[in-house]
Image 1: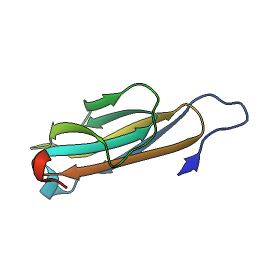
Image 2: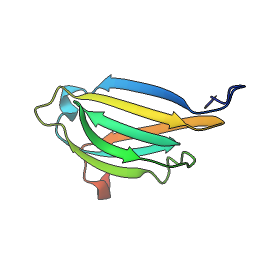
Image 3: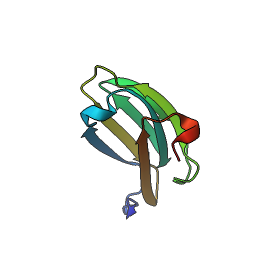
Length: 101
């Protein structure tokens, strides 16, 4: 975890980007947890959005579904932390949600 609570306070934004490997360019289940707000795009299409404040809880993530079939697999994440320590977690599975863990 990193602390983004600077002397002037206020929110901090960070972006993460990656390309999914070819074997994951199919219907996917995304398990996402963030502190605080979060948006996730797949090839420019918004596939997850959370607005509010919360702690990062990877054991109890938000679940989103995205079909990466025929895409470039470009995954971009924006996390906005309001104050204090920031955290983010994402897991990608090509198994149905009930069997991914």
